Length: 227
Image 1 (cartoon, helix red, strand yellow):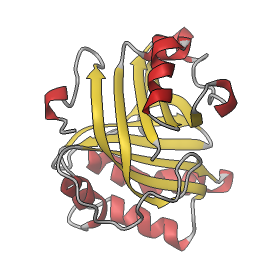
Image 2: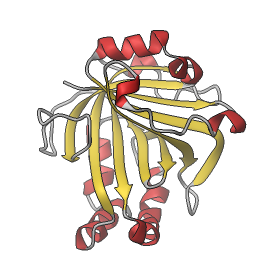
Image 3: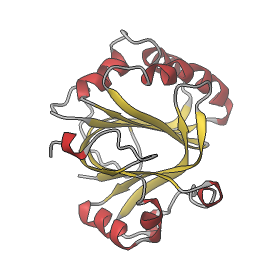
């Protein structure tokens, strides 16, 4: 099954501008798909870009390919001083390059421990403004959601994504679907009426490794991960 990595790092504003190009799969052995962008902080309207902070979300053939990238590639060395997460997909809604059809689509998948949630989208140009209007309540709500320990956008329009860490699958699903926390369910409903994106995926993942920090802090200590 596909292995997923997330790298978030503070590299400084000048360097960050050269790191937001999406790496081509053929440029790195074992890479299936990768998207890069500027990180942005949720909780403001709109999400506030974090100057000099970049994100890379990548899908790999296997753990060997990911480990080889981190051991030998300059991009990995540049981003390695930040927060690094390795994870395996538990569930997907939608579709995204690099994710095979062996990942379950059902909402409830048994997993004990913290999870990484990725939302990935290629947004229609004509739907940018309606999308941002619909998503702002969800962005504000996620930072207050019980069980959420970290959340960030990674943006390089038309690629728009979010990265969030949760104490459990139940916490992430309660925010996303229960209706007890306003914002996200309404955004989902608006997108169903008139889709915002050419392509999108919502992926819940089991965290296999987390290391490093952002601004000197790791939001989910490695001891919390159950492999």
